[in-house]
Length: 121
Image 1 (cartoon, one colour):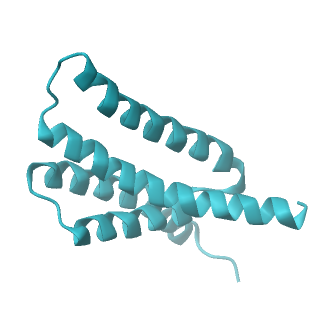
Image 2 (spheres, helix red, strand yellow):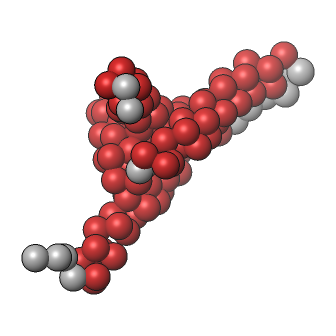
């Protein structure tokens, strides 16, 4: 028996909702001193986002965007202070939080892609 369209639509919205909730958490927690549990929670949300959002067609763009964000965030974090500009700690925490969220999903999708390639598909 096929799933009703309403159920499929609801399930397809879980991934984007999880991503937006993760982004709101990263934004809200940028203003507090982080704990290890914050990063665990963000990583779990990132894995959920990776599982729910990425189809086989979206694997490449998701990984490319994830790598681009992580490299840019790390590069900016190291290059801006060299220019003599002080970065507010809230921006550093925000970038770190988003990196954890995106990076956890990217690791899962990368492992899935490696598995699919090793199968020969």
